[in-house]
Image (tube, rainbow, N blue to C red):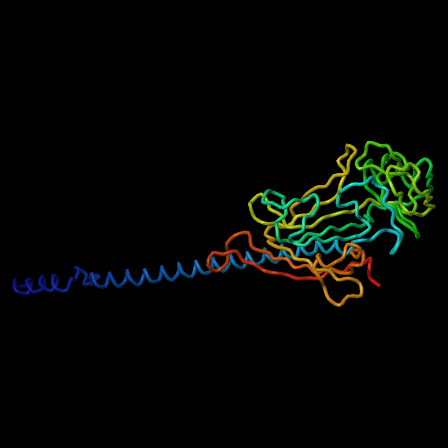
Amino acid sequence: MSRTTSHRRQRTSRAGFRTASGVRGFSLIELMIALMLGLLVVVSAGAIFISNRQTYRATEGLGRVQENSRMAYELMARDIREAGGNPCGKNLLFVNVLNPTADWWANWNRGITGYEGGVASPGTAFGTGVGNRIAGTDAVDVMSGDNSSGVTVVNHNPSAAQFQLNTANHVLDDSDIAIVCDNRQMTLFQVTNAQPGTNEVVVHNTGNTATPGNCTKGLGYPPPKSCPDALGTPYTYGANATIARLHAVRWYIGRNRNGTNSLFRVSLGNNGAGGAVTTNQEIAEGVENMQLQYLLSGAGAYVDASLVPPARWAEVTAVRIALNVASTDRAGVGNVRLQRTIAHTATLRNRLP
């Protein structure tokens, strides 16, 4: 090979950027274009990922909102449907022999009582503390006989203030608030002595340490005009009368431990130390507001609680429930909480024609 030919090949290699094998490399411009295209692909993929993640969060948040809404309504409606109910029948004479008390659950004869957003509900204060009721939100008290606890009376001795039941395996206990009823009347009283699982006797005497206690051991209608009245109006509940614990609950919107709103339920119970007590329970987080309206017997439209006369709560036949529910995290567009409002109607079974 001549010197001239070798020199020409060397110049070709330098000018054309060719390797010894003849493969051409990337120029700087080609490398920059490749990097730019790769960057565009990465940015596009990232945008799609973020969009899909936001969509997933929004879908999950909406699902939780709908689940909370459904659960909140179903639990409320279950109580409301049973409002005013008892194991014996409708339109019975009612007698309350409890000592006078301001406790909301002592007004069982109404069955249901509503509170407009600005009206105080006894025992549940407005405020921003945990469990306090949120101003501007409605509340409702619901009372009925707990049919699951019902037992049959075999014999009643009014002078000894004793019921003999058909079984010792009952759930009635000391200090329980209970109702006894037959086909003529029903009486709200407090159990002063009972031994479930041991004997069949349930006592409803006066002068006991139970709170609030009984004003009289006479369970007949009308109730005594003043308390205490040891004898009251005598009445003997015959065989096949029924005794059941009082089921009393309050539904309202309150502040939870996270500083947001939740649907709360207060229920009547027994502290085991001689007193009736209420227990507060958070039912559904994210329920921001609750508005309730009531349908009176014979009326054509639902009205707010403020328009129901005190004497006509026993005539309420249905309740319209509107719940505003929000997601617990900011899953919506613009990093906001998703919100939905649901409205349903619950009919009081005990007051159907």
